[in-house]
Image (cartoon, rainbow, N blue to C red; front, side, top):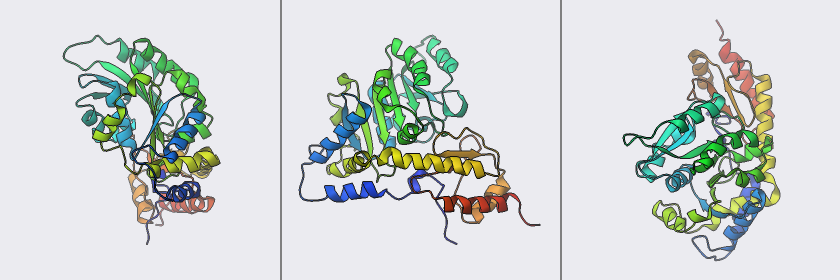
Length: 340
């Protein structure tokens, strides 16, 4: 039996045709290296246009590295970064922020379904500083969140406002920013919210491995490329990391493909025979599932796993089909009601 990875992650999907076509186009002839080529310039212009912002843009190979490099730019080794306790930077990056930041700490905050509770943030900001603890210097937010929920502009402003008032930095992890945009989040509001550094996820949006770092704060630009180089994130053939963004943004596929993924998640939720754990707002569906049912589902060939909060995650992508959803539902029903 061949394993099915359709819903294991949006990372398991193939690259979208628009991304592959742009890669092939960028492969013609010789080009300058280390970000000095026309493809990088075009991709950066498209991102600035999408965000309606005057910002510097860099293209890297890894979302984990992008997040960690950004946080290292915002907090010193003896400082901390406030983030949701289940955010990717807190749970899934093997200490990379602390490694790149030479000791900076991620300080987890509570909040339902991946969104930081404003009261939890207020309490963290109000703590008295001590020489024996790392004081916060930055806030890291994620949109869409690890649980597939989407912050509104107002909700982000409520969190960012008190952080900016203290002069702290703000990082936005947009690994699934395309899905947030497709769910109604206005990307043109990001710069005005006071975000210093934004990571735009390309990989999960249907590209080959490619992420973009957007630098809104001009004082962070000097020597940022040296930081990238030291971190192994200044690729020489930079056009191949920028090209997928050209293909997806010029065609509109960045949000169109994400809208399809979101719609597939809603359809999966409608048909789901098991209780939902979190609201379905982007491209993820989290359900309550006992261990026996999960093992039977996995034994039937579907690769899915239990998430941080104990629920089981099903992730839709640009390549998810109705047929795959219907086949999965049949397998779920059979797994939940085994024959006696």
